[in-house]
Amino acid sequence: MSSTAIDDTTASAATSSDDNPTTGKVLEHEYDGIHEYDNPLPGWWRAIFYGSMIYALVYFIIFVKTDWIASPEQTYRAAALEWSATHEASSTAMVSASEDQLAAGARDPAMVERGQTIFTTKCATCHTPDGRGLIGPNLTDLFQIHGSKREDLFNTIRDGAPGTAMMPWGTQLPATDLVAVASFVSSLRGKNVAGKEPQGNPVPAFAP
Image 1 (cartoon, one colour):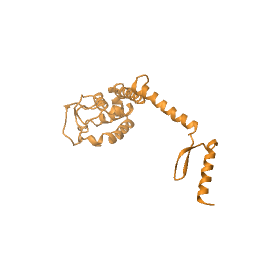
Image 2 (cartoon, helix red, strand yellow; image 1 turned 90 degrees about the vertical axis):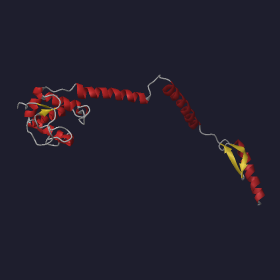
Image 3 (tube, helix red, strand yellow; image 1 turned 120 degrees about the horizontal axis):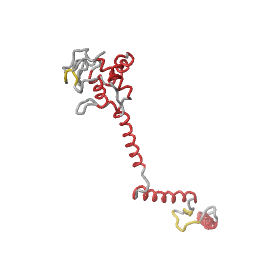
């Protein structure tokens, strides 16, 4: 059989398939003897495609062009601000310790040990582990920069000292840890470990 006959047979078969629903309609153009069938995409695929376009348009109108519904970013920012306000209020302004509470903590070996552990981890960089001072003041002498009582030590630890390297630990530590650190620091007064020169005002030693 000649090549011409084969080509005619192939073309005839392709043409006869125009009415075959399983193969679709043969388009008029061809390339190098290759015919293209017009097989449309499945209905479910087109439904998803058109649905995605409609959803994108509705989303753009609602979240970008109008204020009908808060966007995910706006919702996150509002939640972050609410958490920040609640956290700061519970960690600083609402946390306090009395003079008697801190004095009792300074007499409690377990409380002092706990405070020393936290102090060594968080505060030794500026005050050294024994409190003789480095960047921060010497905590063992009879001088105090802010106030003169144990409560003043607690408040400085909780709120920090603006303009210095002393950060507000009230946003970093729970209330029980703040009390423990203040109890330990108050137990250092009067030990007079040789270190940084005195800073602040002279204060009396704390009563045992």
